[in-house]
Length: 249
Image: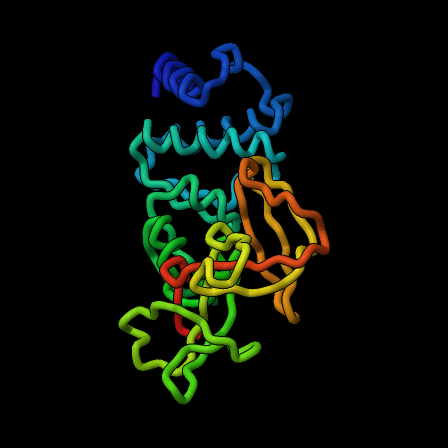
């Protein structure tokens, strides 16, 4: 390319990366971590490729910069219309940035779908546990055809998918946001008594660890609806059958 065209292309990419045009002559070694990431992206885009591969590009960044770069990458994806293939172990990155997610196990895809499909309708227990915090426990059919917990034999109300209609065993997956504290067992389809062991502040959300007969449950509430009791307090945790995901055990 002619020198003038090269410079114009470089300045175009610098603007796309939201860097000052004065950085054109700057030594990349003097740039900050976030600026270096932007320069690397500009270099990758310079040849106008149809597909870009990203191998955990944000893993070395601090949290605030990582969140900013997630949004910038998604904006860049929309601005360029390129195909991004993005490798990450972070659920949050995958959910924020992806149109489609492929979950791999032992070198093979075990499920491919939209973020909502992967999160709300996992194909199996591995995918459910891999994508975010979950409460998982095994159930089996008793002689009467009712589903009961493998832990204590208590009855469990679930709605198995048609594919598991003939199964004798299954795994029940309940996301923490679908669990709630209730005043009495009749207030939910399923109820478990336990004790609040700890709490974890997650910004606008709070997670509570509830322990019950060797089982640990995570309950997630918005800060506005935070649990007002203290630690080591007895509680009843409830959830409804429609809010559980039933997969092959």
